Length: 343
Image 1 (spheres, rainbow, N blue to C red):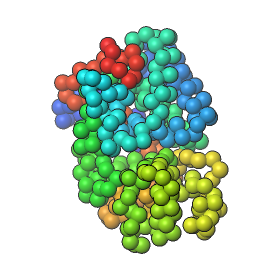
Image 2: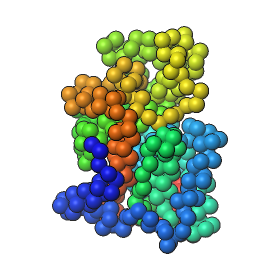
Image 3: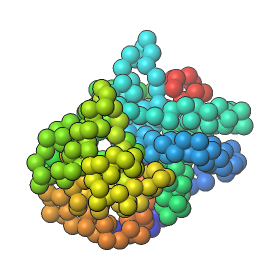
Image 4: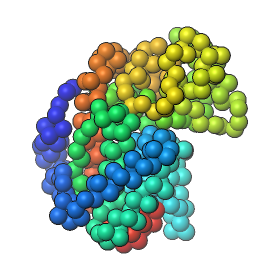
């Protein structure tokens, strides 16, 4: 892929114009949007994220997942941040696909600080995009670094049913994945690139229960035994996506040949997902399915062989993700709190 972020921004705007869809630029999104409106806002976000990840490294992966789950449903409008209410008892947070979403408290703290500095100016959707960008840079040790345009509005609509319909499911086949990503204007390569985010974070056992009995040509038998052990510890527990983030004793028992790759510091954001996929030690069926599609499998090999290329392409794909717009005709505003519609 290897497109610069600036070139990607221009191409997305051009494509939107050709399709008759308002582009991010035409809608007012631009890099440095708050330079005059709320100077230093990106530094405020960054400071919070650095402290939060230092205190709890899991926050970083949670933010990367959260921005995907927001932007893939109704565009990047902060709709996934809304709590249930009497008016809306089933917002996106309540969706089956959104089990385990976290880091909402961090975003509320950031929002509260920014409101003191610049009341009614900075949207929660922009804060989330900035936070995910900063988390990505920190977890990748600076190897994934990009600017994101801002100027988004927070949406009014948030429906669990829409999230379950639009988010790609962990049980999907390759063709279902391709169709799901294509609806958001992502091609097969970009789908594989964004899947690389599964090198970090956690997933509940209900998201990969079918893999617990999958055949050996689909999952490493030793890894399958490890997953069965982890999922048997309690009711639907979360399990790390990357086996190198598992407890050393667990890996030593079930996958002794993998002991040397276990890390003391979890959630290093790199191209290890592609190596794991080729070794069939990934938890989601949708991950393994990438190997069943010729083009997708080729990109898995490509990014396993070239981590630097993946860093660059992941950055570009995240910029593109952050530019997904709200549905045509949607209205928005600037929330006072990210969890409540309060304009």
